[in-house]
Length: 176
Image (cartoon, rainbow, N blue to C red):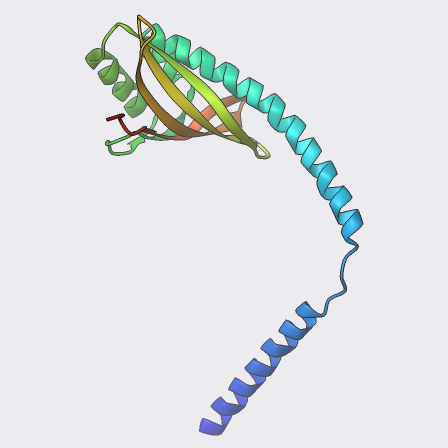
């Protein structure tokens, strides 16, 4: 039995070394054609990302308008029914109904004298998704910044429209 185990170990090791040797000795590709291909793909992705970033910023601007108007239902309509939202210092919320309730509770507790803005800093396009990174700025009615934070959101196109399926946000450190 020990001989069989030894032989299997040697066979396995030999097979692994063969695969490693083949992988390391595969023919080199022409780097100039690869660079040209990468540049073309990168340019195409950049154009798509730029256009998508404009679209996502428009959604965030509409979101901010709804937030500033204290329209919790309009904000909740940006979410998919099966969305998950992860806010700072809170448990995750699953589903549009739970997210709507949290938005309503938050609006009931906060001051009327505030204006929120969302600034999309990056967008990473996928086949049917967009992952967004952004900043949140809240100012009082005099224009003084009272809060800053950051967020990430994953948008998915459903029935021809992007809806938020995941988001996470948290506060920036308070200045001392």
